[in-house]
Length: 124
Image (cartoon, rainbow, N blue to C red; front, side, top):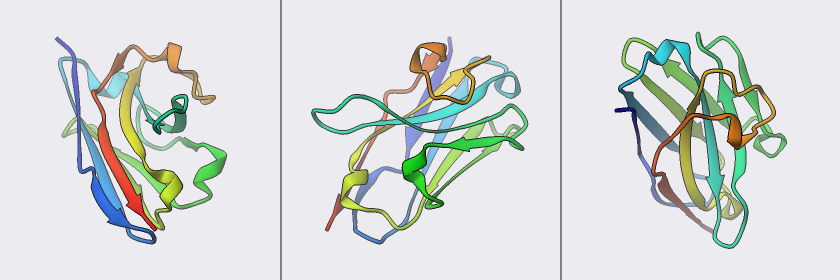
């Protein structure tokens, strides 16, 4: 059974940093691209970024503007999302997703597995 479990969410102040982690099990991790998405209350799910199989290729949504960094450790089956310079508009539930061929455009339907998400709340 495939499981993706996010951790690291919480409540922070604007300008702070937060590192989210996603632990994967039940799949051959190195054969999956890993994406991060977020969903704010009352809004549609939004693509944050995706990292390729080996970790050398990373694509971010335009709104990231250099504030976020996605990395992965295939030995530990984890993918991280480091968020710096957090803003109140970054408040959302952040979820990781795994896909064998999801592309770089952040199409959620192309991902095979999803985590439950972790809440990030940024106060201004």
